[in-house]
Image (cartoon, one colour):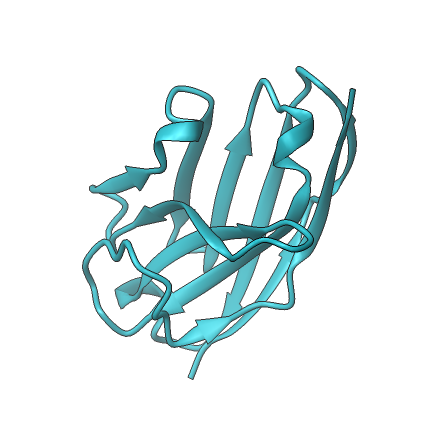
Length: 123
């Protein structure tokens, strides 16, 4: 069982940066694949970035490559998403998710989800 709590969302101007954090409870975090998703009003939830259990392999959606960085600190049971050069169309609720698979997972079928943190990018 893994419980996830996101933080770090807020209001930022276009071109600005935010760093999201996801604190996980449970001993299985260090062996879990993790992902960041986002969902804008009226749109489907989409995968932004994913990372394997060790942090040695990562996946990024094409729309965020070169601007976002996913990372994890297994000693602190924490997942991060550094977001730079943010765009207004990236306004959404951002969710972290965990999966019992150790390997980078690029679909929405994760086992555990956080409650989400709102990111609003103003133009």
